[in-house]
Every structure is written in structure tokens, then in C-alpha cells.
Length: 92
Image (cartoon, rainbow, N blue to C red; front, side, top):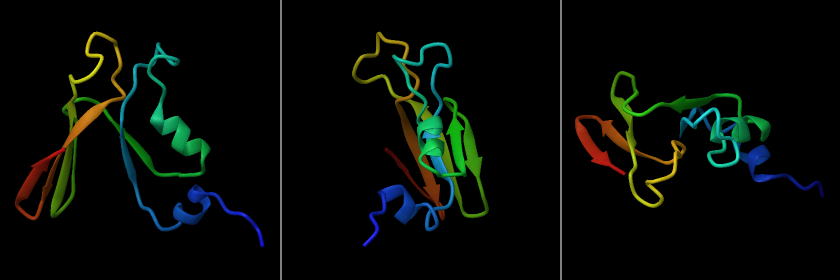
């Protein structure tokens, strides 16, 4: 029986993946989630900058800065999200 990775099982079932943008000059300190997911075979990966928004007919997602742990480091790959679906919203 062939072994399949999680990405091979999921990539045909998943639409776009939204990830936070990273600091381009600091690859070891702030790795790119977009490049990692594309290397796993996910083709439709969207990297959002802080306060950037994607909106469709009935939902929207906005990337928010996360100033939690290690706020003194220049890591932009950690972010919160504001979701708005059918008039209801939540921050996470």
C-alpha cells in the first residue's frame, strides 16, 4: 500500500490557503510559510501583509499584527486574523 503524505491527501480538497507574510531579508528568523506550503504542493497560497484584506461576496479576512511573544524580534510571520462571515465577525 503506498504511503501518502498529509499534503498529498489534502491538496486536492483545499482551496486557497491564507498565511501571514514574512520579512524577506530574515529567512532564518522569519521563514516563509507560503514557500513551505508551495514546496509541499499547495498551489494556491496567499500571503497577507498586516491590515491587508481579502473580501468575497459573503466573507472577508483581514490580517492583524500579533504583538504577543517575542515582540522585540522582527518576525512578521506571526499574525492574527479578523474574520467576517455573513455579517458576523471574530478575531483570532
